[in-house]
Length: 93
Image 1 (cartoon, helix red, strand yellow):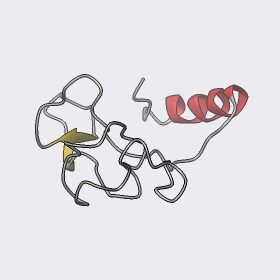
Image 2 (cartoon, rainbow, N blue to C red):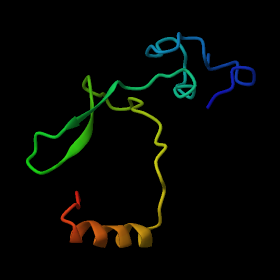
Image 3 (cartoon, one colour):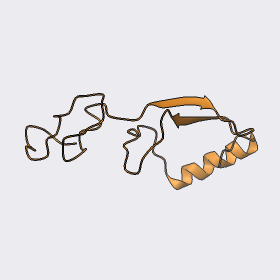
């Protein structure tokens, strides 16, 4: 993230919050200025796929979607959980 007190050349935090950045040169303040895509949680139209996260509008290459704040697990833990999900027919991969 840019700090506007330290980084004076890129124009960090000069565009309004909650709106796409248009005039500044970098996009390193997206999280702090709440510039992210409008996300929707909905049931998938794919049979037996469950729920998913969708965007309200089409994305362009380089668009900032959102900050990931979920759990980070090891490959070993992922495989352990995968075996449990497979037994319950709840695997989505």
